[in-house]
Image (cartoon, rainbow, N blue to C red):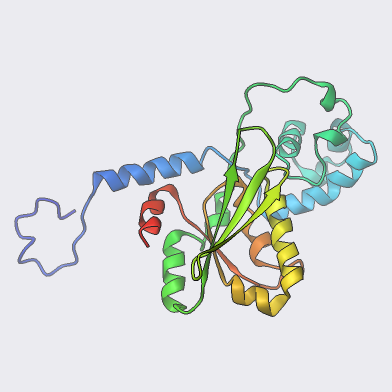
Length: 241
């Protein structure tokens, strides 16, 4: 670090500085991200969902499914209950006859985030992509919640180029509900118009946005947009841009 160096004025080498405030912000952002979300990749979660959800809908219990399909799913019962409770699978608590009779616990343990979804999608990657494609419009996506645990939540889509904002009401703040809205917009607008309006999507690192492949790719794996994430330490810089 070059902080306090006496030769800094005459030195011709590239300078490196340490800023305590910035380092603290980075640390707090990493600490926060490590304590939320899930630890399973989107593709693996989709594969597991295809196995377990049809069986649950047929009336089989989670215990029976885990016992008879242990080699396929390779997860324990508790993990499946956490995934279902977090609305990450096609089935919900209403599909578990015994669970709906239990009183809801006051404290819920958060499950670990798969940080692999951020690879190549950080705010620094976003800045590089925008510099390489300066003519592409940027769309900011966010969630607006009312009272906690009330269920309903808004998905907001803000077009920076024209200061237009769209809002969509969702029953739950889940990754699936976000993907469903994007898929519906894609079907209504068509491929060409959607790609023209949504070439770059910038959002935060909320758990509802941790399935980027479902947002920037169609069901046929055709790329229709590019999703990037802004962390807590980047929000001040982004708000000033």
